[in-house]
Image 1 (cartoon, one colour):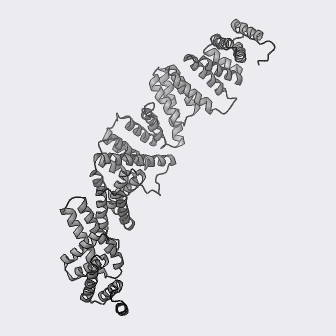
Image 2 (image 1 turned 120 degrees about the vertical axis):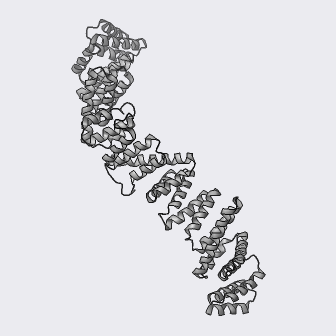
Length: 528
């Protein structure tokens, strides 16, 4: 009553004051005098036919009285004016049941427009009705928010659509339609991380519906989502393998469920089946992994990736010989995938694999099955985390196979990683590298490596040189490189090579003559 009397008092002071007239009408409505409120608002509207706030109030009153056609005409005028926000201050005044009437009417009108009319103009009109429905509900109308978001998608207003989907999810995180809708917007915007996060959550809440939504997209979008999901799963499985942890609690990822989803989206691709097996292995579900492998690839897989997984499962069952045989199939073909699988093994198991692989490689080498031996040596190298012992063995096999560049790369890696200056192995490594360099006609680099070996341990280096390439032969090589330096008047380099050449073969007359010539040319100069 107090508000109404105050409004009347204000009207007496200023009869034409629009705010006082609206305040009076609101007071009459709250007192239950709907007709009087209606008359008061009509009077105000006569003075200002474009006042959206008055039109909105009249629409609410007409809905309350059951005059739907009149109410809709008034709402249309509000939409034409373009001020749907005028409803915001009215929400605190009108009763909840009357706001519900407005919400239902506006939502129904929007859906009728979308179902019966086409074109962006009508979609925008529907958006206006939906905005009024959302405001009437206090911003909680999920159906109107979802429909408006989809309208924004149609209108290519992606960020606005994301906002509406996000509003739904803030109140209801398990709303799968909104989750998928927002994910697809992120896909269009190429926001991989955000898209995958929403898709994974949608799959966890309702796998069937989420897959239906993904399958409804264009093939290109489906393929992109599948690839992103695969990358996400591989990343998660890799981190699980590296940490030897079964579950990442902070992510709450149900890997097998996501794997099944990928198969339902595109079960024809064998790589999805391999990934699903990896997920089962990561969750330590070895029996399920083996069962799926055999169902898809047969009891004796011909697919290399499948065979390697079969080997990994055998290793988990301590069948080392069989495991090594199958794991070696990937070596030299896909070392990256092999390294990934080895992450699932603890250090003790990896050492065991390396030992057995090395032994098998030695047997194959003696039988001159060098290509197959190479696979086993590589398995030993990767399984041992690049232990020098196995790298040297592979380098020898590569040299025998005449893969000199690869052999040299292995030897250089071993030399680089050797931190002991007195290591007998390092002397041998320098000699082996020198020998390979001679084979590929890199004589000067070879000589430098032999010098390093002689500097470390002269006796051991000479023993290696005697075995290969031979002291006489290597001394001749030293003479040739030294002579070239001499002709270029690089006397210090020539002298150094000559001195070491004579250590290798002290009776080499050509080296002795060259040394004498260097002395004559540099008499009075210190060159060493």
